[in-house]
Image (cartoon, rainbow, N blue to C red):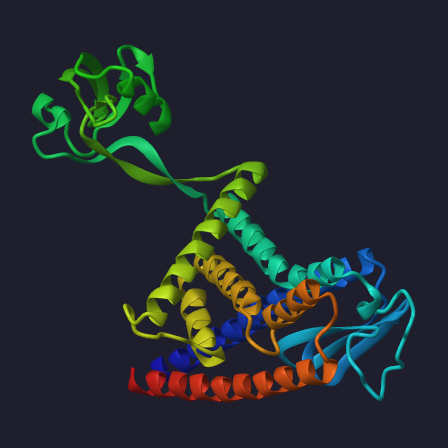
Length: 357
């Protein structure tokens, strides 16, 4: 009976992981390709195909001049634009709606829009997280005290909730800090709630290097649900922080300060499984993090990726003429082969690590 229940739980977790992976990969691909698509449309390029996934078609429909496809392998996608690539199956359009007929800046905008939309997706996912689960914000409850600091010497304790300073009610850490900051080296009356009762404690503040008053306490953090506009602002801030953090980590890996720790699809699926088990909040955080990684990775000047195409367009801008298409295509082809080998290596490494766990 126990074994059957365990197998059932494993099956449910496997299904949840599969669905979560499909949704996360699908969102990242759709947002990325939609970025290319919408900017191409805005600058007047004819978009012939919008595909999610690679391989043979699972579903397809035509709307206007664009064919929309869902393909079997959901590990990427593409937008086919008139004049961007030579393809025997796609007629060459040599008019003003061709990709190569647009200005360099317009083409750079089209290519850059894909990765940027991954950052937009991360902002939206963080915003949903902050609306749904809340944003970790400091409260007026004391988490711990600075040893030998004014609050500890005056008799404040961890767990005390500060409700007023000098008879002025405070319910937010920011307001309480502002009052204390304006009273350096002064005696203030701190009203705290302890064990359901309020009591007043006189505290002689000290000051920091900026001359601002300090009590010597650390706040307890509580999740505070945000309104949509504040959540979007916080989501933008968090996305920016993660971008800086990831770039810093990559830099430290390159110079050897940190060991290279790269993961592929197998590792991602494993992390999604863990996040599913921990709840929606963790899944949203992971999805946002993965979308940021995808956006950054595509901006790197690696052949066959968006960053490489942007690099060739910048070269064209400075030279005043495009790089020989045959040479550029050769570079992308070699880069694509290297990426495939890298993909195989990372996947092999991921499998080995999972077996060893």
